Image 1 (cartoon, rainbow, N blue to C red):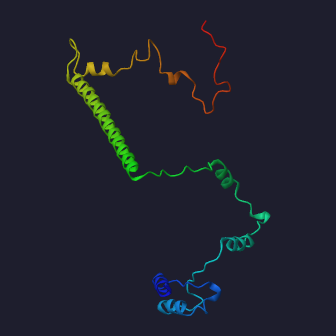
Image 2 (image 1 turned 45 degrees about the vertical axis):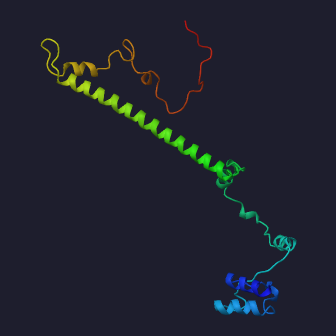
Length: 190
């Protein structure tokens, strides 16, 4: 039994001895270090100690912060704005994970088909408008009007925004800052 454990530790390149007794452990430590060409101090040692001993060691190693080591306020603000709780990752059983993956892929496929259908519809509409405009451009106008008259009239924007109107973007003054009173709640139609 003991020889099989030593063989296992040899394959893992570690010693089953605690760090304090590495020299006294003899066979496993020397075999590992000889195979790797390392001294006893450089070999990776395997030690079994209780968790309470490890906690006691880590308590003594904590450094006290100096007053001059305050973090950058920008980094502190970023850390405060980031939410602390990270949602746990989804853990599914095999069949449920397969079902989730299948539904997810089907949803992505549906979205892609919808996107392509909308794109085809937009392209068809654009081609139709382009063909109509080209037909207007090559057709001679009514009566003695020259070729392209109908196209020029169709491209005019008269009456698009209402009778003798302008686009709403031009109605409001363009300002760099928002208004002091965003909405006039007292306004009524006269």
